[in-house]
Length: 144
Image (cartoon, rainbow, N blue to C red; front, side, top):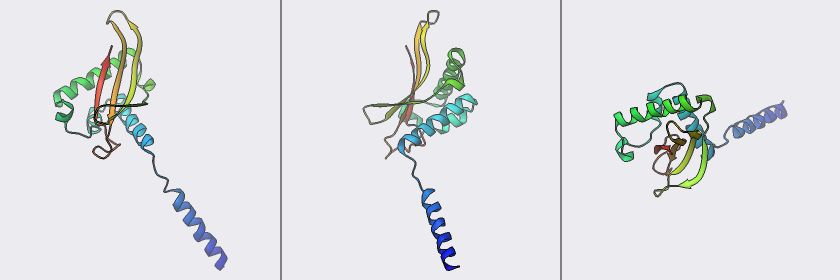
């Protein structure tokens, strides 16, 4: 009986330790990026806004600008692709204040009516000592 109790205790310890696997920064970034895509897909503007981990003034935005940007992003996705086709691509590029850029491609081709060749949403993460990876530290809609 003592052997059984020890084995049961050992099994409990093994299960506990295996559940303590840490999430990598890349996994956190992809999770947050997917949360942002879900907010766009499900038209939850307030969830999109809550993912911004800095004061809007830091990214030169206000509530009205944020609303306009959100509406524009959704409109481009609806026109050029679908929400189900959006995905996040982590780059190895950082801006001048060490924020990591993640790209969400929306369109690549040629729209001769609008004179657009590419649309993507860049979202930025970090630096992690100032902005946790479950929030974004900025975004920009790129239209070329």
